Amino acid sequence: MKIRVLHVSHSVAFSGAEQALYRLLSRVDRDRFDPLVALPGDGQLRVALTEIGVRTVVEDTRWWIPATHWTCSEFVRQLDGLEGRWQAMAQLASREKVDIIHTNTIVTVEGALAAEAVGIPHLWHSRGLFFRTASSSFPPRYFDSPAFFFCRD
Image 1 (cartoon, rainbow, N blue to C red):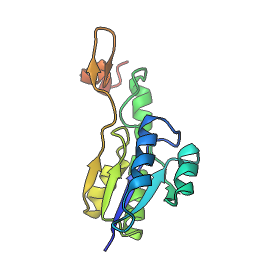
Image 2 (tube, rainbow, N blue to C red):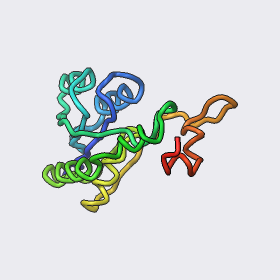
Image 3 (cartoon, one colour):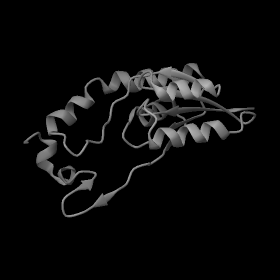
Image 4 (cartoon, helix red, strand yellow):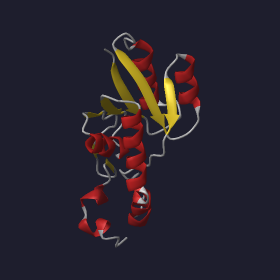
């Protein structure tokens, strides 16, 4: 019996994380795994995955980890509609009888919430650099500030 995996991508570009997902899916044992990729739209990654026979669907996702230049208000805007987005992802997982959800980066949360809602495992693949220097950091330094979360920016 094949393991059905829903892979959630934060982007349809063909940059580092997306290329890593593509390489994984181009080599995965299709006798053991049945991949489905949820993408936030059309783009290079969708074309590449289709060419290797991986099914894709478009599901709305947004970044929940702020870019280093976001204000509190911009961060909060990303959370608008979150409940509907993770519910749609959960419905997809149920409809497709998914066994596990793999979120290809930590910047989107919909896959994790959907997995919890339908009671299946979730794998969060961190593909970012976590760092702190004198002038920059990821996650952003303001993420440590309670004032940021009370939108006092």
